[in-house]
Every structure is written in C-alpha cells, then in structure tokens.
Image (cartoon, rainbow, N blue to C red):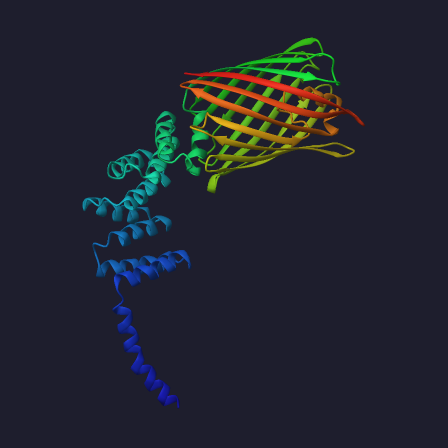
Length: 410
C-alpha cells in the first residue's frame, strides 16, 4: 500500500508543479490579492505579483498593485521604482496616479504628491480621490489656502463626500491668516434673575506656522453689574493626527466671570472621519472647580455628529453634563445648520458663572439651534437656546438665549 501511495505521489507532483507554472496572470493576480488582503502576507503577495508580471509585463493593474504592496511593506525605493517605470510608459490610469501620489504623501513628499495629482487630474478632472489627495498634501505642507481651493473643487463635484467635508472644516480655521470677530449674547430669565444678561465678545485670530492663536476680550452685564475678561487660546498642531487646545482667561470682576480659567485638551483627527477630544477645564472664583471633558465626533456626508460630556467630581458626588450636537453643512464648511440638546451646564457657556454657586449640580435641560452662513470672507451666525434650570432644589425656571456673531477674514 505504501508503495502504491508513493508511486501515486511521484506521478501527481509533476502535474501539480506544471499546473502552478502555467497559471495565468489573472489567476496569479487573484492569489496575490488574497495573500495581501486576507492573509496580510505582503512578501508572498509581492512574489505572486512579480510572477504575474513575468507573464504579462504590460499588465498595468498588476504593476500598480505591486507598487502599493511595496508601499505597504515600507519598501519605498522599490515602490517608487515601479511607479517611475509606469510613468516612463506614459500610463494614464487613475489608480496609478492615486497610488503614486499616496506613496509620496505618506512619506511627507508633499510637493511631489501635488505634482502627481495635478498630472492625474489633467486626465481625470472629476476624480474625487485625486482632489482629496491634493488637498491633503497642501494641508500637510501648511499651504492652507491652496488646500481650501482643492477641497472646494471636490465639494463642487460631490457635496456629500464625507472625507472632504471633514478636511474642509479643519481647513476653514486656517485658510485665512487673520480673522476679527464680534459676538453678542442676550439672556432672559423668567424666574431665576430679575435682570437680563448681555455679553459682548471681540476677538482677533492669527494663524501661525504651529497653529492658530486667539485673543479675546469680553464685556458682560449680569445681575445689573458689569465686568470684563481677557482670554487667550491656542491650537498648536502636533502631527497630522493630533493637535492641542490650550486656553486661559483672567478677570478682576469675580462673580461676573471666574477670576481664572484654564483648559487643555488633546484632539485627534481619526480614520474614517472620526474625531475625539480629552481634556480638562478649571475655573477659579473663590475656590477651584475642576471639570474633565471628553467628546467624540463623526462626519457623515453633509452631517457632523458630536457627543460631549463634562464630569465634575467633588467630595460628595460627581456632577455630569451631556450635550449632543448635529450639524448639516450646506455649501461649505462655513455654512451650516446646527441642532443641540443636552443636560447640565458646561464651562464654555456664557452662563458659566452659575458654577460658582454650584447650581451646576442641579438639573438642567437645554435645547437650541444655530445657523451659520458666509458671504465671501464675511461670516454670520445666529443662534438660540432654551434652558430649563433647577436653580434651587425643587424650583425651576426658564432661560432664553439669543446669540449673534460676525467674523471678517482677511
């Protein structure tokens, strides 16, 4: 019996070897894709792709795939050699330009990436992938105005491109070097306070090589008394993925404003158009109040969804604030409708001086909306918010806010 199986094995092995040697280029290409995507074995996939190219040297799709494999395997010289050889053959396939530009972008050769996308767009002017790569390369090179032009062109082609809208929002605050803003907030209380509140803020933003910096002055009339506050905020970029929020404020009119306010957050632009934030806020009136914040956001087509929480621990309990926000973008990152609903008071709200008396530990419900629109470099906003606030245990009142804003970019 053993002799029989040994003889059968000797007979069949040559046929198996023969069949492997006579696989078509398409069959080898399919095996290479399986090895890469299912098995994550790039070395095996490269070997199979090279065998396929020996059979069909001018099979462009396999060559592009081989270039991608070298890219994923961190073999940049080999990947570049494959793409340069395709370029010498004047290949005009969209996927070739996407793969080659991606290699250069991922290796921080942003000027070369833009050059490749421009050539690809000359053949494929409606390519969303190439426009997005071009915008990303300019953004990484800190050429925000050019990045904004590319992303606007992409949004003309497809206003519902999720990745484009996500990048457009990030570019929005950086494309203009300077911005002057003024905001006005009006608050009316039916029971809690007898006097309406008025708050005016004036700010100047400057975009620097490491990120934007904002100086803001606030004037408020609350409880029939006036006060002023000065703020400084910065958003330094750490990498393509991470950036910081660093903020501080001072006021000599304690009660109208906190005497001191500080805050730091680490923000991340994550894959699949997600974003996240984790940080703290500190307010000092006569004592320190520490709040810890976390949020997660997601872009989907023309929409942005965000959920944020503030947690305030003390010796007796932990207070919570939760807010959900939905934005619907219309023609650009500067034009959108927003809807917000939540519970609790956040330190970012104009009413944050209520935190001094620990009313933030009582029950609060809020709901509101906002509309932002742009006319060239002029940005306008109007918003309203309704609060139902438990200002003493068992006693509730209503608050109605209206906020108006204007920004001039230059």
